[in-house]
Image 1 (cartoon, rainbow, N blue to C red):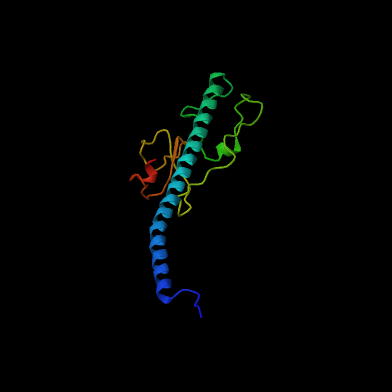
Image 2: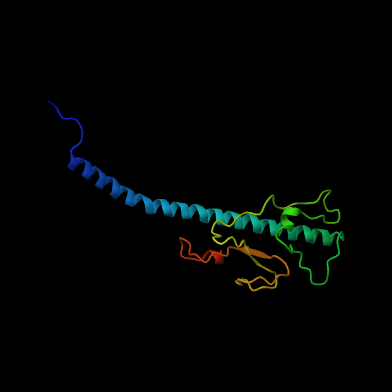
Amino acid sequence: MSNRGLTLLELIIALAILSVLASAVLPMAEVAVKRNKELELKRSLRILRNAIDEYKSDFDKAVEKKLIIPSVNETGYPREIDDLVEGVDWGGLYSFKKKYLRRIPVDPFDEYEEGWGFRSYSDEPDSLFWGGEDIYDVFSRSENTALDGTLYNTW
């Protein structure tokens, strides 16, 4: 009579090998997930910063062509982040209300749903507090450390 199947010893050895492999793969998977989130953060920051720069460029064009008259302390940067989504009529610079984003990208490291951090034109370059006049720059409010050792809020 032949016995088919695994002995208890073979089963324990197979489970030990599988657990060693799983313990080696899980940390690599966590790093891959974090790396993907970092790429998404870089992409979102690039999209937002390009939209802010394009907004400023259109403001400057409209002022140059005398289509709008800026107020005394107006820098030409958006006052609210939603201005990039809602769009602006630059006094006829375009035949339509120009929108710069379809939606505001989400910060992948925003654990507390605080949203993006902003800097105004008059703020210090590394300031973590927004002056409130306009939006010159955006940054992540996450205080976590990236894989390269830098803080996400310094990107």
